[in-house]
Image 1 (spheres, rainbow, N blue to C red):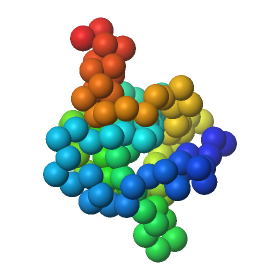
Image 2 (tube, helix red, strand yellow):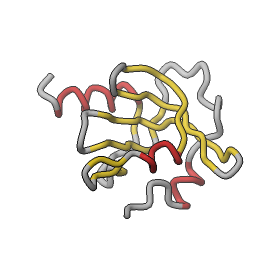
Image 3 (cartoon, rainbow, N blue to C red):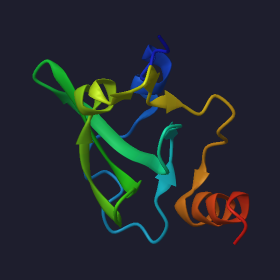
Image 4 (tube, rainbow, N blue to C red):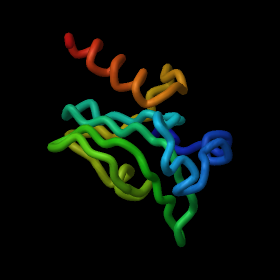
Length: 107
């Protein structure tokens, strides 16, 4: 199974609220679920007990900023498919990530 949050990414992520007030958040990690049209753009995160709490933009049933945990991502399973980290993701501003996401889906 793919490691969703390797040590080097864990160290790169700014702590929660570090980008608060930023005009265009910087996105460090992109997760997606191949069995559904869900995507998570991670902008911040930090350890929380025995879990890891992320903040970012979630595209799923709704499109919204919010909190989610590593455990939540790891628990998503459907017919053998699990959440994956986009290994080809280029870290960039949120506005560019969203534009690329829309382009990949045909507008």
